[in-house]
Length: 472
Image 1 (spheres, one colour):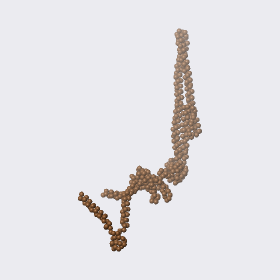
Image 2: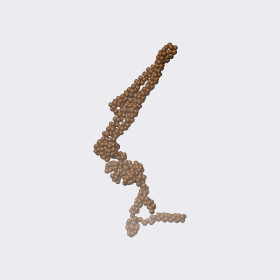
Image 3: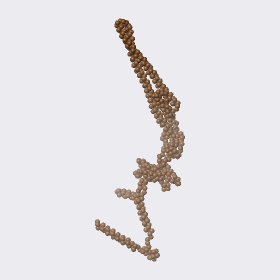
């Protein structure tokens, strides 16, 4: 091994010495420079031999070599964009709005035409509102009735608690005639209740007076009965001594027994009257409690009905408003399908569409092979089909969203939708600005990365070599 290295070193040393000697004698090997006159007097073959070579071919070769070197260097250092080409179309930022009626109806008026520009909230089509108007009136009347019933119940409860007259508070929007009728009804109900109370109160006073009289009678009997007992005892002793007749004694005994029985009867009467008074008081309390319960029930029922009728009235008003079809956004009317006043439309029938005036976007269809490299935020070059980009240029934008799932396209198979936000939605065409219109076909080139120029040339070769070595 050392001999081989030694031989290589000697060979390198020898050729180095030869090169140095040749380089030192390079001027001696050059033929002397001759002028044109000197060359003219030489023989033809010597003139051709002595004449210097023209420098043009040499400089041409040098230029070609330099260009090849620069090209190779540019291919090694320079980079080009990698783009995913996706066909698409121009769409509004806010999507197209479809105007539909809620219910079937008859067209009463048409205020727009196809292609007309409209503003948000502008009246487009009016439908006949006769049926919905009747529902509105009916629901409002029912709501007023429930509100009056609630006000009447509140006024009666207040009058019952404060023992005052009925003071009905008029609900807003109710006519004075209905308020007066409801007030009279409340007064009649309160008068009926107070009449029943007065009847029970009079009966109670009567019972209490009877109780007072009976107690006085019992008190009288309790005072006279001992005297009668003493008289009867005296008569009995006198009878035993034969000082009085037996009939006189029996008369006195009869009076005594009568007083005892009257006292027992009157005491029972007191208990009876006391029970009757308690029952009468209970009836009066029950009468007031029952009247209050009825009023509370009426109040609760009226409140629930008022809430229900309020919702019904709101729905009826909303249905009436929906007979006036208005523009949801500002834009341009397209695809108007109703043109006859008096024509019939069905529920949810598309009558027209409105293309919004908002900024435009690009909806591109990215093929399955490119979706792995497309993401939000990437720069996009948009070429409009109707305006050749070689003459009018192109637009720029960014990817703002990519769909999470593929959509089956009949021509392209499974594709993904990507939305591109444009930096500008108009182009300078023939000395004037022209705004893009929804539906224009475009080609979106999404910049997915960078690649060296030489890779474009080596990639097919590398692929063929890699696949070729594996084939049989």
